[in-house]
Length: 113
Image 1 (cartoon, one colour):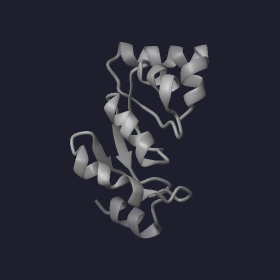
Image 2 (tube, rainbow, N blue to C red):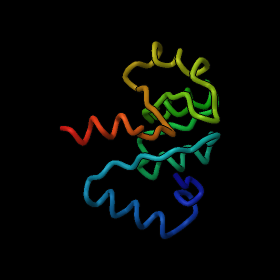
Image 3 (tube, rainbow, N blue to C red):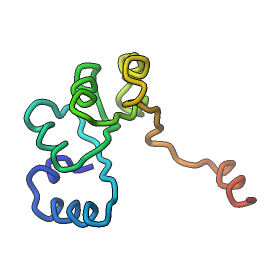
């Protein structure tokens, strides 16, 4: 979640190194990140992003090998702008939820299982 840390903080890079050592995927989000900074970010083995603002930003992430998670956030209302990418790049896109909290109804269902 800390994309400046991924790029510039040695302690974050060390944590990611441990994850890579054990074959773990590194999933983050980088809203607004494009260009050289995005390429550097992807070079750190980041595989997915779910905080994209625009079609062009998400397209750049896909074309550089990322998988993107399309969602309608509580603050960013951009589902309609990003949804066409699902048809264009179905192998690189998925839908996800964000900022969701289980209700008492959901907790009751889960606890009864």
